[in-house]
Length: 66
Image (cartoon, rainbow, N blue to C red):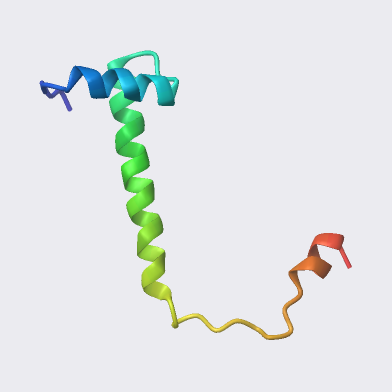
């Protein structure tokens, strides 16, 4: 999708410092991807109280391969 937008120059410069992106297109794509991932992650909080955990589950034993 082709779109023309006006971006805050200072914000773009700062975002480039943190992102490692080489182009504005790459920077915007990365920002949108992170926004979507963060929103999806927050939606997992809605599952609170709906998942029952096994009291005998021992994740440390599984890590050891026993």
